[in-house]
Length: 183
Image (tube, rainbow, N blue to C red; front, side, top):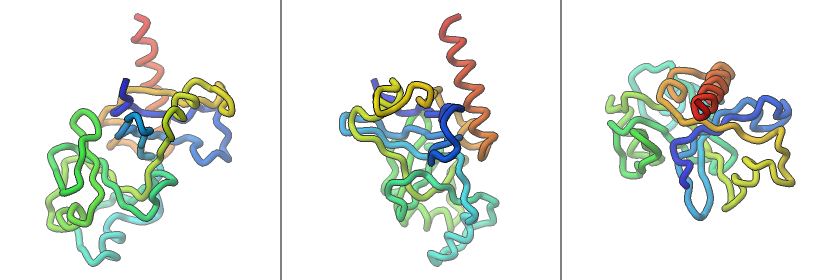
């Protein structure tokens, strides 16, 4: 069963010193070779406009900040976005969403061609085959009280919130979805 389109929500018991404390990860690829996701709620101090300017591009004003997407491929820029935009590297990333990571997407954004909703980040999160199953199950060396919570993603959680508030909204969503599954 694919987890593409799911949210991984850091358990509230996860210690603050953990790099994944209070994180919200969107799973964009789940396959036999492993799982890939992107942290969506860790904005950096850098604005997207500043990043694009450093690459020689100008973009219509945006208040968007670059985000830390995870500890893997930290020199690569990724964009999670609605499927009303496509670039040469765009691949489906769940219902109505795509992920892109190429220079052409940056060029298109600078010319004003943008998806209706998007987040840009550096890096991704990745799990080896079976690793996420072990984490979700709390199997050693992972602990059940620090396991991920899960929920079905929606555009409001992904694009309308940010930071710790986004994580809190995802916790609420996970709780509601869990209760609804029993009713």
